Amino acid sequence: MRMVKPFQKCVLVAACAAGAVASAQPAPDYDFTWSTIGAVGNPAYVDNDPDYAHQVVNGRGSVGYEYRMSTLEVTTGQWMEFLNTFGGANGTPNQFWHANLTWWNAERGTDGIYQLRTDVADAAMTPVFGVPWRMGGLYCNWLHNGKGSDPQSLLGGAYDVSTWGTLLNGQFTDASNHLPGARFWIPTLDEQLKAFQYDPDRYGEDQGGWWLARNQSDTLGTPGPPGEGTTSAGLPFDIEHPGLERNIALGAYPDSLSPWGLLDTSGGTSEWNEEIFPGHTPFGSFRFERGYMGSAAGDDVAWMFLDRIWGTSSGSVNSPTTGIGLRLASTVPNPTAALLVGIFVLHRTSTRRKGGPCVQL
Image 1 (cartoon, one colour):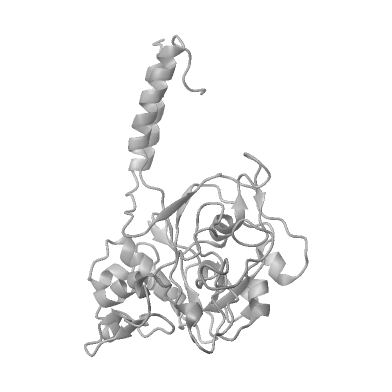
Image 2 (cartoon, one colour):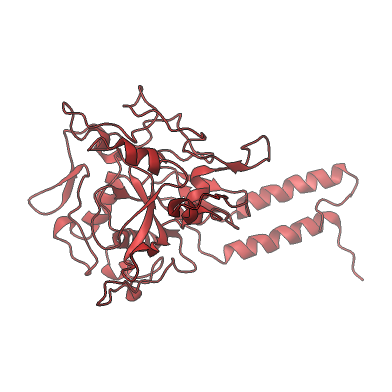
């Protein structure tokens, strides 16, 4: 029988892993910053409260694979690029297209093309509001297919638009989840929960657990403008500066982070996920969203509920809902280069150990 030397064994293992990953087309970064979510197979969140909102998240949040989440929510500048690629306010690439959104910091020109508002500081970096779930799906398809201008690029890749429809009773026919092989998608409820509030070092190194509120805390943050508070969630209506809570740039609270480095999981805008909301049976045309934007009505009660781990709400998949935006999930880039570095390190280690095994098989 042919003997395989320890270093050769390392090369074979790494090469097989690289081949498995290389078979999937890697996702580009575009102009997003990404956070990798690890701790594969983490324990789910357990909540014994019988209330419906608590039971939505009970037993959820375990994810058996590594993935990425955009560190920030989708910005006004990023969304404006998407709309303008297809004619801005005048574009109608398909029946699910909603270009005229509410509460975002760009304005329509006479030609229908959007431009950033000049009266809002850093308008490009404010979160986009009023995104219908299906528009979020079209956006993911556009990214998956290379950000081209062909309307066909909106119809598949991340989501199969051919499944989208509504029955006479109001129930939708949309496929529940993104397509296998999607490079960008709206996060699942489990992915969202984990990225927001599971901490692999919650109780010490490698002792994982769940935070009950956002930003690595069991208590709510302090609403206030940047430099005064820790979140824009629950920021009360300011009669002297109306719309302030919608004009705060993403990343303005740099010390308020999820365990994985995500910003604005509290505040910013509320964020869609893929979970279908069953509460309107048979009118199942709603999906879940989590989080809370700054409150134009000063509704502190809603903020105190929605910024906790069990705080969920829902919106119609095809209607612009004022307070909802999105954050993206994505595949982890091809780690071939990292594996080659690992091979070198393992080789150096194996030679120092006089040929001892460099991996345990």
